[in-house]
Length: 275
Image 1 (cartoon, rainbow, N blue to C red):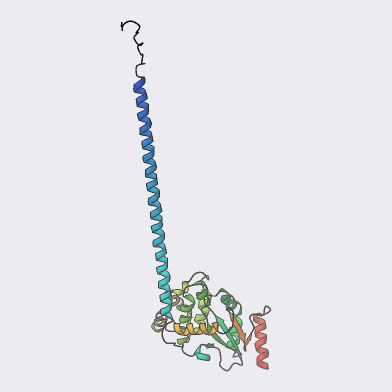
Image 2: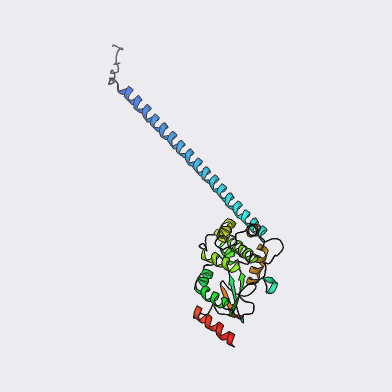
């Protein structure tokens, strides 16, 4: 094309067919991938926030449930030991806190502080019970049982209290010694508060002839001697003794003697009776 003197036409531009369309398509695809990735990240963040909120709600509800159970148990324990102190039949000693076994005329007295949830008490019973029964049956020894709820205080729960109440109910029926032995023979592990279940205590009464009666069941279920048990435990706390079992022969603490054995106990009782 002639543009006049001194002027030339610009050379024509050549564009490869399809290149522009491909560039535009590539840019559009990249934008779509970026948008999809951002949407994916937003969805993941939303799910994360929902999980955090959900977990927090679950923790709050669980904590509230635990607090509710603890509060209910505390209120129940307060109710269990409220009311007048009713000693079991035949109880004697200071404030009628002793359950006696054996002949009252026996010259030697063994005082035993025990907790029905206490493993060491079970060990004592397993080792010494035959000798104690032999000495009480022959009239050489009487035993003053004093009941404690030490494990309830240390581990939580109410099994010590309820088992002691049930034992006091058995004393009302004249079946204390037999039921006392059954409770130790069937003692749950220390961390299991199985004796907090009155149904379990009534079930074990079936192992003692004539104990599972309507009167016994009512006594157990009503916690008739709970306040008496609480007073007995209070006496132990003010006694200066450190743990259970605490065993005294004629007032002397003998179970802390590492050389003590059932045979030695029998010998000590016989010698004391001769003196």
